[in-house]
Image (cartoon, rainbow over all chains, first blue to last red; front, top):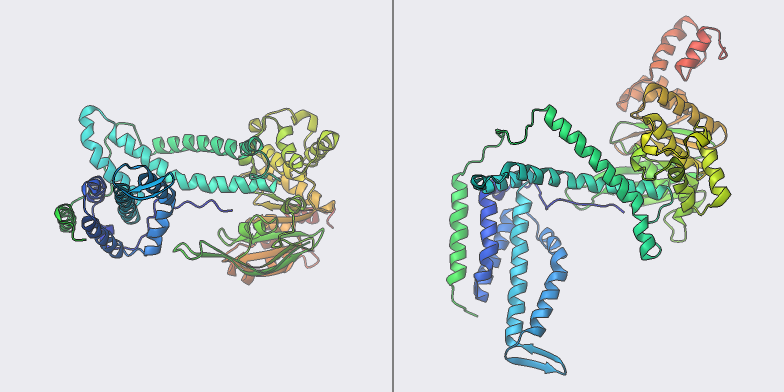
Length: 266
Length: 280
């Protein structure tokens, strides 16, 4: 009964992809995900799929961990695919009583499944090669132009990084409190729905109280180390684009353009 | 009472975080005994005691409590947890009830007690832990001092009347008086016949509380026996990365001057001897 939670899937395999600038990685993955929906041919998707697979190899991740990351979206995938197959109007290719399958529906279902799978492939590659700190640093740099509109980009990214940082801590603590209350005879999965909801009180209440007091202590600790909201801070890691980043941009863009313009060959 | 046979456990096996937590540990704790489990942080002490009431299951090996195999499907874990009361580290962080009474009553209620039986159990455990029950029962547990909170948390386990009381670092974070009070209550519980398992990295406490000590290092059991033998052997204690209790250091020096000095388990015993108190 261990509540395990690995944030993203960051694994330090020290690959080329780890060395890329996080800003570049975030931007590339983001635009890949957006433009994914503009590709209109199976051949184009095939090219992207091969590209994604070679990135996985390059990141020194195992394919089994990629498939593990697919598991949470499997239900969503199935749901949307089924909906598309049965409820898209168009040229009938199969009919049995009230079940009607159209060519367009089948086509859409295949497209959407491929898009979702590719989408999670690319995000997996991003999160497995970029640590939480790099991600938030990159994110902060990318949203910093919004400062012109008085958007508190530094605070927002600090908030994100702190919450990400404490997610595993919360899970560990939940695990500990759960075990402690089980030692006092508590059961979390028995009885009626109401009873079950009530049985979570001895878990949720201490969890919340401890989180609040931890937040308090964290705030004091940060202030005692000179943190002031809104004040300019320097950083330990200066992000700088290297040759590798330009190569990555060039390759990704050209693969993508190729996937967009390629004619259907199957 | 509690028997472990060749128990091993690996965390996150198959991933890069794989870590062997417990390596092939066998031990047996008899009824009425007082056992201290010592070792450095990360040596597997806390993991080890979670086998005792079935919170975690070993990858291999067997755990028996009162003759029942915890790996078997017929074993009722709830009744095992009633027999083996486990007090976690910083147990006051698990408080949730509005009053001390409700907090202490949580365990016995889960065990099916109600009415007068429940009240008696709460009252008894509170007075066992040195409280005047009617004074504290209606207070909020969050408003008490650190030492009081800790004793309330332990009372909430004792209220289930477990045969074995297992405590994971019960004195950490307590002030001097809170610690001394707690140690006295624990020793007293053991004298009354409750089996006591005491996890600590404070060697002075281990020596004072238990005659038997189990030492852990890197998930392996490296010593199991008389605490006097253990703590008087510098080779053993330093080999595990622990320190010889202060009392033993002083006792060794004094022993050279006073050969008739018996082994002392606490500074109080030592002082009593030197000043002709009850230990002599």
